[in-house]
Length: 411
Picture (cartoon, rainbow, N blue to C red):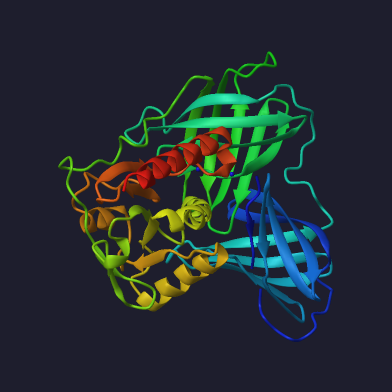
């Protein structure tokens, strides 16, 4: 599973905040392992004050995640991440923060130790200059030689010791990764409020041109995967429009779920008759879904008056309607979503497939279905290549909007 994405987050209060939470750049660290060999995931964030209230900007390459739900009381600094149901609870001690990050979407292994130091813009601390240039496109195999093996595309751009990039998979991309190179080693990390990714890679070729890599990724505190990669500018993943298909070609799809007000909504409702419809299978917990929602909100505003409607089916990580509603409404507000988002009350890809039995499978969130005015399926797209993927994102948006425009022309 990228151009800049701005996400905002704020406690509304009339009191004046003491500015002992210093403005400037901080270096944050999440501890992924508390063993003797600690594994730490670094990221940077800025602190500034707007109307005398603190605002945090989490930085990942070209992305700024603006966090404005921040509370400072005494030595306590707590902040709630935007869109995703996660938060930091910390104590301020001079120029440092110490505390925890809590991911409320998980029931176990959902707390990580956190600390941050003021006036430090260094993400990865390095002690040696780069010996190789990792810039390029790579064919990547995660879990090579196992039954869990899967392919990805690695895209990296190096400038001196600084490196940015991402991994594209058949179910989405890893969004904005940023890091550093020293000797023949590359380190990358991302923290977006939902996912915490940490990659370590080593070049096998010491000539200065990297042909083969081997590496390891740490997923928050949810496990690790090994991978290998080789430079391959021509490598492509499976066509995302070939992964999920109709069991019976030409079959019409149907569903009925409540919207955020509890009103039952069906594709057969008058509102959608003779309209081109995009159906988005998503969850408010999903960073790729967040990127797609930001994009689809713009598409809806662009084409709604021409006959386009969008329906999002939210598969949340809770069957509690009120909690799911709260999370969905935060997402809608953040990205000015004016199309219907329905609460399915179901969790996971297996349940999504059961609720939409006309598809062979649902293998990823998001999955996007485009219907013509007769509600015949014209495209089923698995995953989403977000703005961090650069060219892949541009190609996806151009292809999607071209199809929508062609379908809108047919009355």
